[in-house]
Amino acid sequence: MASTLTLARRALARALTVALPLALIALPAQARADAGDEATPQSAADTSTAAQSASPAAPSASPSPDTTDVPEPTAPASSDGDRAARASSESDDPPTMGAQDETGRGTWMRDSVGWWWWRADGTYPASQWVRIGGARYFFYDSGYMATGWLRDGADWFFLASSGALVGGWLRDGGSWYYLDPATGVMRTGMTGVDGTWYYLGSSGAMRTGWERLADGWHYFASSGAQMGGWLRDGGQWYYLDPDTGVMRTAPLELNGRRYEFDASGAWRGYEAPAGYLQPTDHITGLGDATNTLTWGMNGTKVRIAQVRLGLWHSNKLASVDAPFVAAVKNFQQRAGLPVTGVVDKATWDAMDTGYPWTVDQYQATPLPLTATRSERVEAMIGYAWNQTGSSYTWGGAGPYDQGFDCSGLVLQSLYAAGLDPQPIDVIKHAWPSYRTSQELYAYPRFQHVPLAQRQRGDLIFYTTSGTVTHVAIYLGDDMIVHTDWMGRPARMQHITAGYGWERMTPDVVRPLP
Image (cartoon, rainbow, N blue to C red; front, side, top):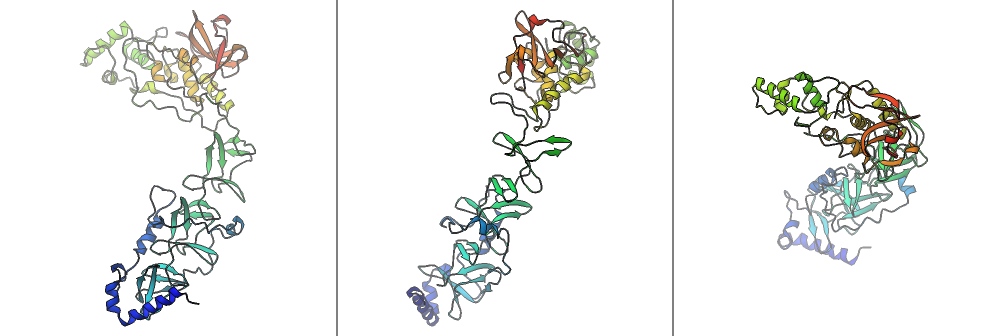
């Protein structure tokens, strides 16, 4: 039974049939039409295309459908059970696919209630989908054009403020929805879009974070994309199957290594207690930092320059001293360089040592983040052990052929274990007044425990006149690996060899608590 409003509108249509020219003059300009130029509420085609181009993977790109005045889509709120059963499915005959094409058959009309489509024969579509100008519209039984969320049968659709059916990604009410680009049907459940899987809840809203589905737990990034592989969340590591996205709880064999997980899926790997240095898989890059060889400088580059100048021997400190400066000046004079006694890059290049200017940037490669504590302890010890036999170089931190001093060996061993005790680094290690052993002993993010509680992987410190002057890595059974003083290579020794119990600090440093 037609409403009073509908009857009134039909009367208006009949009147317009009699006096069309006068009516067109009286109507707003955007509602006027002739056979060659149809007036539309908006550019429907542009609205639909813009909506499809915006996706959760790039939320900064604001979708163009005007949803400012669209109510929250509270209507799509059926239970997870019945909506999930239809996840990612389409009906055999989607209602919009059979939309009647009305292009050229009428004109848009607007009154105080809304827009409607007036056909040349005086009728109008009602309770149906129609296609006009390449876009699809739905008209209520009253004949007025629908906007916003619309339920047709078992499916939900969204029509822009232009009335055009929207397809693709839609942001509405603070949530993302996905509407089938072909049919406009709102999708729910697991949905694949351009090779990426998303989970859309029973209301159609895209979900993020942890979701428990029928096959197990999944994790969806802030973009909505399903994650795979290693995931760090809440201080814990989880492994998600790269193909299915399902969280792993059973032991995993990966790249020749075994990983175990607790009942919550958290990997039983290593993480230091709060406040202590956490493992990393990337030692801080040093950029352009390198050492110009000025008075008192030590380390690898000094030793290399000494060899080039004929000054090096096993019982000589790798330090810029008076003989070094004199030899550099003689070289610079012969090479036609400014005679400064300082080895800058130009002098270094002229020396043709075979080593780059940045040779003092050498840093051992750390373990991956998934390494356990025991693996890190063994990596630290293993690195030091592999340097046994290397010569002693004051201020040296490797590589092997250039030697180490005690703290240089320990620093590189820490790097190998995935520990990066910034601001301590290999560049500062060669500075004249910098004592890396003292810096390591006082490092605030390492744990100190009594000497009597020493464990494999701890750092043992020795003093001279109450000041820390030496450091070694504890192996267990009162054995250490270290290097000390000129002519003595890196080696394994008893904890008291050359120093005694009385020179040890009363505590040890535990880099891996």
